[in-house]
Length: 267
Image (cartoon, rainbow, N blue to C red; front, side, top):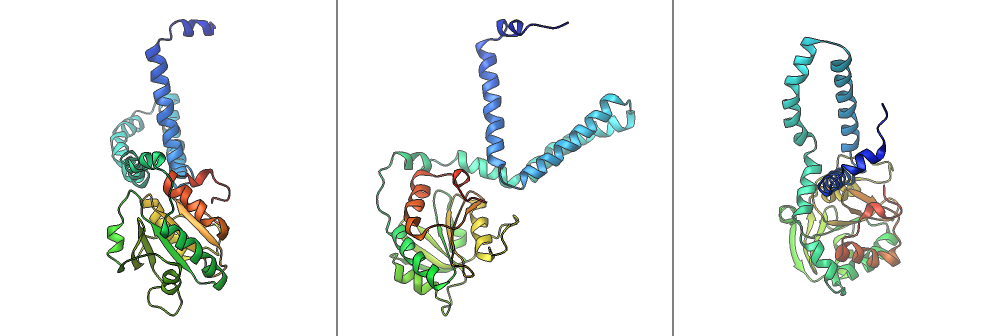
């Protein structure tokens, strides 16, 4: 017997509409959170396994197998937060960040560290000197600052060029910027385990991705091989940046919380 659609509309209350919208928003938020990460493949695999088990338990009366599935489900509920720990951690950190809302209403002003980085990046790119500069935001990076050499200095293009000169002892690590100060150099960043499609992206790019996966920091990379400039944020990387527009792009991320996934060229 076919039930008309009006039958459901007549029985749909305001609470039902709010309930449906709330579930939709939660599911959409989860999909946005894991988009472009390894969690997509893991979630797809879990769905395939769940559908397989469900089909067997519904269409075939297997007593022992059904008992096994029922007892495995509690273990899967415990394993779920372990498997998706990076994504869940990122979600909780985003909920706890108030700085992004504050930056939306804060008047834009010139940041001396951004200006210095933009000017230095052009010359570093021309010289094929590799560089990694990490801009701290709401998530503190003190544990990574402690791995490097403390500077606490005023930013300038000349200082950045000196740090990332191939003959210096500090050029291998990352420079961490806090506010408008160069806090430390030669800092050790966590390496991303995500696969990089381009073989020209090396250890610096993996380090930039790694710090962007565990924090809301914005990382700028200058490739030693090609001289190309890339920006990493929120676990994604935006390559082949125009040095002339680097300051404007950095302002977009640092002041407005720009989403790298919506910009052309992200990988």
